[in-house]
Image (cartoon, rainbow, N blue to C red; front, side, top):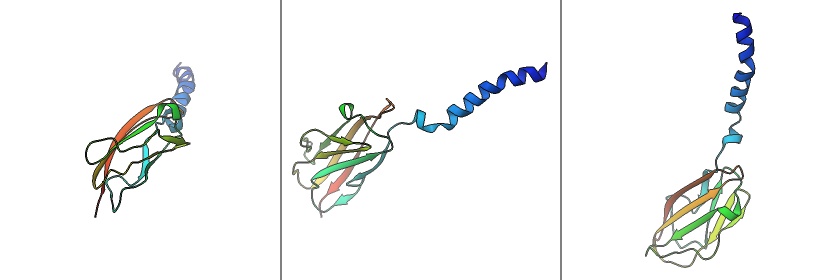
Length: 122
């Protein structure tokens, strides 16, 4: 009797292990790296901000907003998405702290968001 109950549990154990080990199926698009780098200081205002994620993105539901030192929007136009990369052009906003806020939908339908800063100046 004991042997038959154990053998009936094997398919469920296999399913459980398969779901745990297939990290890709439950993955989210997390920020991998950015340019300018997160928390970095650059000499002059960059022309754009580019973010790379751990998953491919859905362009229609992914965005970046950048504010400059005065608190005004420093991004110019709509974010461009290609695979796992998202970029946005910047206006010249001067020296100081820039805030980058992002929100993405990965192709596996999970959303993530986050923010970081970088500095511009000598």
